[in-house]
Image 1 (spheres, rainbow, N blue to C red):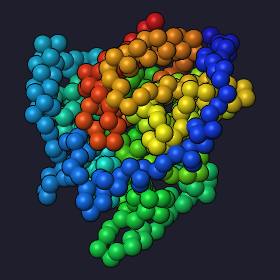
Image 2 (image 1 turned 45 degrees about the vertical axis):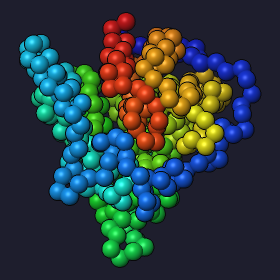
Image 3 (image 1 turned 90 degrees about the vertical axis):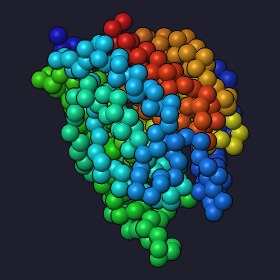
Image 4 (image 1 turned 135 degrees about the vertical axis):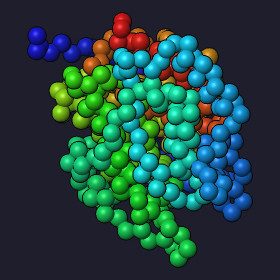
Length: 376
């Protein structure tokens, strides 16, 4: 009836004193240090096909396991008579984001989203979704969470490659490259998620949930700093858009990337209307060096930042336990009006940087778990 529900009490608690090594993300190692063995002149092969250097003339590298999974998915869709007339899952994507590229051996490369979209299309899953047209985020929308001078710098940077034969440079640090297409790609990455939010909130649209396949990624980008391959904080921009444009109040952001979403955490560390939850690998020397248990938000938002640091090598059993006994009770208590997921998949078995053992089926289970939460 237009009345706001009363604010729930803080959903997380922390009793121990903060550890010095986790208080400041700046103290953590850079991706550059971890990429030396991947992007140098003696780069070792990448274990994940989607992250491997692309062969000439082809950006897709599909494994035999993935081919078998796509075949099984096609069979499941046929048996389930999908897609049906009641499609409610949106899918946002723009091929122009693949024009953002840097060193051929860099883990963040066009092959990531190209391969994702290939598998979604070949499996029939893309056809079972509602296509959501992409768009670019405006400077005004980006400045809801980012400092104005930072937004202007990203939008108007100049590519100054040190070597004449290089079409990219690193103006924002040793791990985050740019080229002539980067500004547009970054705006499309954030804007595609905004388009998905608008579709979900449109009463005349069938879309009620969805996925935006985007790059550059965003969860390491803070209010005024690009880092860890990230330029704009896509999920942060989308959360503020849902609040500002669509009038939502309580937003939950779930981050299951293997690295702590330090940028997103910093953006909402003092906002009790945004529950930020991150489960990630944590140890000394692992990027970005933040995300300890005791980091739980500040001031009135104390308890609305929840970190679950896990050891290297965590698997399906670990994320199952975290989802069931930590995240689901938090969501039930916070009662968000929308749930956003920073769905990094680098905790998957075989990723050369993550070094963990979550299976594709494990990510599927986590997705279904979150999708079913609103029903309860």
